[in-house]
Image (cartoon, rainbow, N blue to C red; front, side):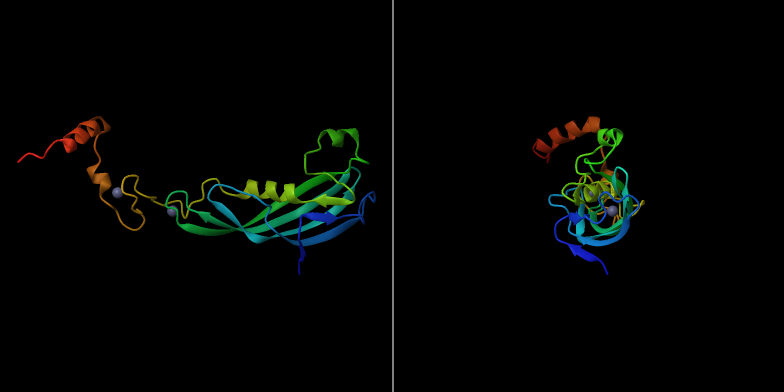
Length: 182
Ligand SMILES: [Zn+2]
Ligand SMILES: [Zn+2]
């Protein structure tokens, strides 16, 4: 069973300044506020299964993040669901103890503060990394017709047959505006 965490802050007082100590995490987490990605919605809850280990420079979180994404096919807009399982390896630097080198590499959101870490940045980064830029319902998706909007996976609409050379399109528009010949 995973433990629910209401915000994304995790108490790590038992691990701070105890290099070698570790603890297993199995957390059920809400989706970070305002997390947005094109054509993608993350379905709560997220699950973070990891080991958190106290190291010289801070705390190392190693494990995986699982989530279910609701997507739209980038070509035909059909709704899709996809389960992701992303590997996560992140160091939360403890400014009170870290070496100068670790401090120069410190990324915002990845530090130990008041015996807590906030896994929000970790969630955002892992999700952004795994959300597909161009989700497709299938490699062979035919998409929508650019002219009439018909779903070409369902049936051909015939627009392709009528396609005009773009040089003639302007002439055709002019012709359409003229009164029809008897
Ligand atoms: Zn599609
Ligand atoms: Zn069409």
